[in-house]
Length: 141
Image (cartoon, rainbow, N blue to C red):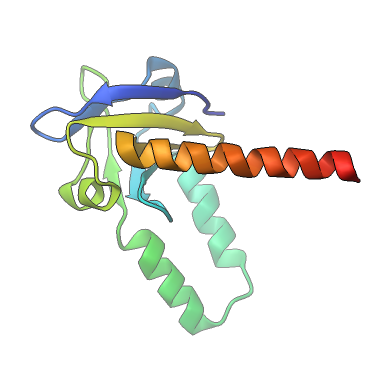
């Protein structure tokens, strides 16, 4: 389980460290892909396999499954950690997430999300407001 948020500098080669406690769960490597919003999703290999198996088991038409596979797997990259605990973020993914010199590493339960500072501030505010509304609705029931 991944949780917490951690700002890190991205070096001139597009390398980003991840928190040591996250790296322990990712020692076999990671898969990087575009998130549904403007972030990079980082999956441990085992979790990526579970996601892949889950998608293959869904009851969708062959055409929709092909499109879904293209969207998810077509923008995916494998990565491993260097000796300093960094992974290289491909330019296309950095561009998608609007990440330049700093990224916020966010634990999101079964994966990690990489956000630009500006995009994370917007998303965090939105998520907190929505969570407040959901919690309030529990009190009304």
